[in-house]
Amino acid sequence: MRRLLPLLALLIAAFPASAAPVTVVDGLGRTVSLSAPASRVVSLSPACTEVLFAIGAADRVAGVTEYCDYPAEARKKPKVGGFSGKAVSIETLVALAPDLVVVEGQMHERVIAMLENARVPCYAADAQGLADAYRIIAQLGALTGEDSGARRVGGNMRERIDSVRRKTEKAAARPLCFWIVWDDPLMTAGRRTFIDEAIEAAGGRNAFADSREQYPTVSLESVIARKPDWILSGAMQRGGRTDAASLSARPGWRILDAVREGRVGFVDADSVNRAGPRLADAVEALAKLLHPEAFR
Image (cartoon, rainbow, N blue to C red; front, side):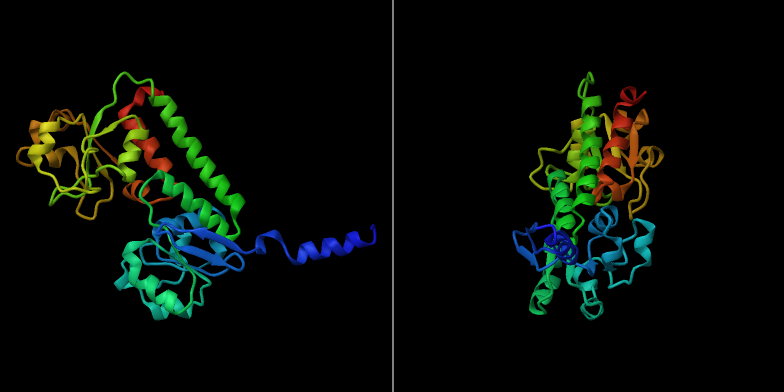
């Protein structure tokens, strides 16, 4: 038996556990199976690109989109086009010889169909809320052989958000918050969105949590009627920054106490819109705006 031990050690080294086949069910309910963890990944999802770098799979990322801008190292990877399905160059993508392509979900249906025809494995994230973000981190860890990194990242993210919940749960009041997703037309976030869950986790209430749409277009009159305590928004809107001064200058907005009294706040837009570890940053930033007393 002792003579067999060195041979067994050699066999284990030659066939590490990380090389085992892996199967997951993605956000669209598709079964994704790989004979071994992916070694060349093309990511069409800025959020998933962040996850791949965070869990330790950066060396496996063979290509990204022009919108995959975080972390800074992601910008150095070969580009396959823009974010939408139509903006992706399938020829450039296939030329990178990926053994896994990561997409957002329904918006990349065209790409998914083409990859299936080419027999290139494709994982669709399709995230809607925090539970999906945790799932995606774990699944990308499995698909790249970085399970331990995924557990570390997911665990840290969950711990930070849970810590915020504990700090704010004893607050005397939960401020009502109106989130500006877009200025013209005026658009906000409804339920089952990262924004809605981030506001709730930070100790606030979403003024339009009762909306049946995820991102409803609303009127200023409906916002005024709900009397929000805070006006919140992403700090890097493509339509331009919205601040207390600009809101005060717009017809009708000064009626709101939140605008008159300067209760207008911002968090990094990408941190709250992407299903990645920076969601914890967004929750912490929101909580410090809504409940500064809990962080003194």
